[in-house]
Length: 258
View 1: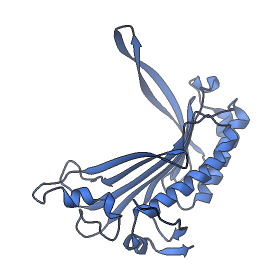
View 2: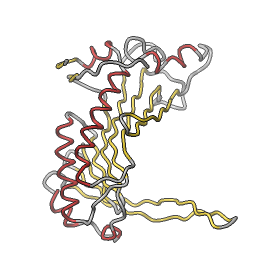
View 3: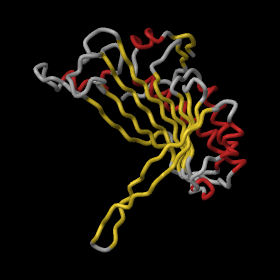
């Protein structure tokens, strides 16, 4: 993909379905107890008044001599949501995430990230992180048109395999692709393609996913995560602009173009 000049654009609408900021850290013993983090709940209750317990299991592969086995660990997380249930916070002993199901502006997300993690640092002995990541999932849905042909909307390199390699006689069920690379010293995972919401039926709807996950596994001071969030946001925005063409920009409506 040829390098392009970075352009800052703001759009009237978008196709984002999930935006997730997540921080992993060394285990917090106080959060391993099977009771809600009441002090944390009290401090964020104005914005996230709804709470529920989320039970799950984690499978860990253990290797001892020639014998390997799976160890199952029960895990309890707590989910805090706003009244509209358009954003939520997950917290357990190993990580905290902030997720938007209805995203408008990065500034809104950033303010929530500051609230959640400044509260966390104030209440618990968290000094360093194991991982910091920001993920943007775009599910692009167009009402009509050939579901295989994204010419003028998506960069041709991202859909050429189904256009040039797959026979028209084949019923394409799904075409998802995955890239993992370094970008400005960070890890970038990029998933893209025809995800097909009607799978396992053949593709009939014009739908395309652009999913970016920018992260670092470097141990950093917990208070540096706010700067990382801004850096990751900029990187993902640049990659999104690389991935799309003017036809999609017209659909979203450019309101600011610098």
